[in-house]
Image 1: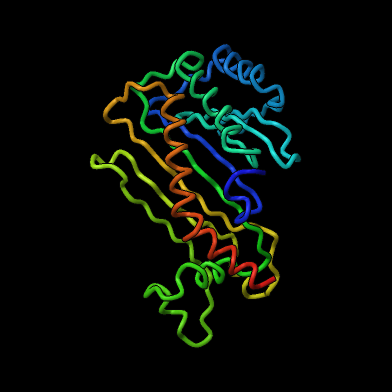
Image 2: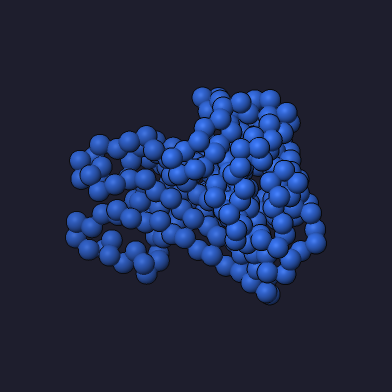
Length: 249
């Protein structure tokens, strides 16, 4: 991998989500034509599944270290690329999906609710995830005050912060820290191999009906998300968690 975050995580992925205020078309002809176009652009996308919820997913082989996927839900179109060789490679999938959305799925700018780009980072740690987050991100925070009590142990430290990045509040950035340790594991000391995840989501709400094509907008969002991750998320969130995990090794 040659992306700038390789030093901080075990897996890196970029997802794009387009939310609609209306039900997306799930007719057989529309859905099959859309997925067939994705397969032509990316021949590795050959595994089709339909969930009981109605969600339809086309994906590459998930046993590979790097793979792509595209999914269609009732009101949301999503795509993701896990462990791309670089960010530009991932954007080739996302621009293809966004370019096809208005024509293949009939998505109109009038119905769009939001468009967002997610940069995800997974870090392996077999131990108390919440203890790692308390130690690395909240050591001097008043919110950690209960840890000063006798026999206190961290069991749910999952900070989530959202800020507006524009005067009209339509551009918003969110950092989510996701831990996967449960109380049973902390009590018994028997921890799983689950990962700690950090998600940075840059979302643009659609209230002003932008005239820019979707594929161009998603590139702009991804560039801004990358810059924020490089300048803020990586040094101030990913690095402290990574260092705390390394200190336990």
